[in-house]
Figure 1: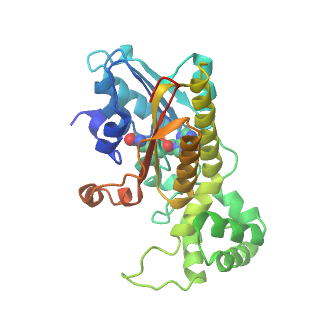
Figure 2 (figure 1 turned 180 degrees about the vertical axis):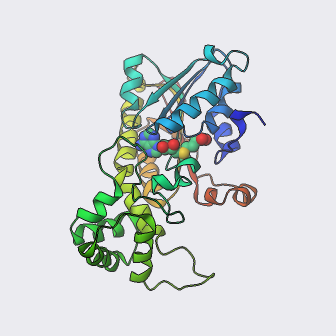
Length: 321
Ligand SMILES: C[S@@+](CC[C@H](N)C(=O)[O-])C[C@H]1O[C@@H](n2cnc3c(N)ncnc32)[C@H](O)[C@@H]1O
């Protein structure tokens, strides 16, 4: 199997079907990850197309770029029109405007990649023992260890409740504060053990999720400001669509298709609301009225795809009906 196809992205067929790539188009991947989606889009846009890859994780971005170049131009990868931009997708629209690039397709496949969650050093998973880090961008200043060891109890409880939708947030926060008074909490398994001792979740094979799932989700969201970044991207979609409508040049082309794949309701809700608002304002057409989910077959192969929800809209201009 060639290198670029070693990773099967979530909603792979559906992503291509809804983005409808055409020869010569510009594909902007806000969350390049391992380049899975980009490699599927590449043959359809051909050598005259352009792929812009963005990721806040430098390692993933480099892998994605290598794969996308091979997928676009197997005989001469160096010549492929692939632009790699490292950073938060919240800043990507400004970067594109600076470079004079207009997107025909935009994809944001939110969250983390398998390389990140499977790497114990990233501290994203309670299933591996590792430092309590959780940063997707290794250069960002605040990690999960700092949050759990320094935030006041009330703030920890609030964030676990709000971003983990964890009803036992207060109890977990109390345990954290009691434990850190004795010694700093340094590792994922230390934290997972504390959470397990704090909450009355049923034990055994029938318990629905690991008791630490929601707390780890909450910390990851806060460490990476995931919802703040998503909010800024959604706002930029609105600004871009307004530019199109007024005939100005922005970062989106007339008719641009935008697909966002969310993995939990805190991500999906703002996408749904924002697309609906833009639809009401006549700036976009909703291509998906209901979110597109993974098939049973995909879920069987990749259990994480079970929670994927993709919403797609298309930017309208006065000439597009
Ligand atoms: C689910 S993976 C994407 C997988 C990709 N679609 C593929 O097919 O290989 C999500 C990626 O988005 C990146 N990411 C998450 N939030 C980001 C943000 N706000 N800005 C830039 N990259 C982000 C992560 O580092 C990760 O590599």
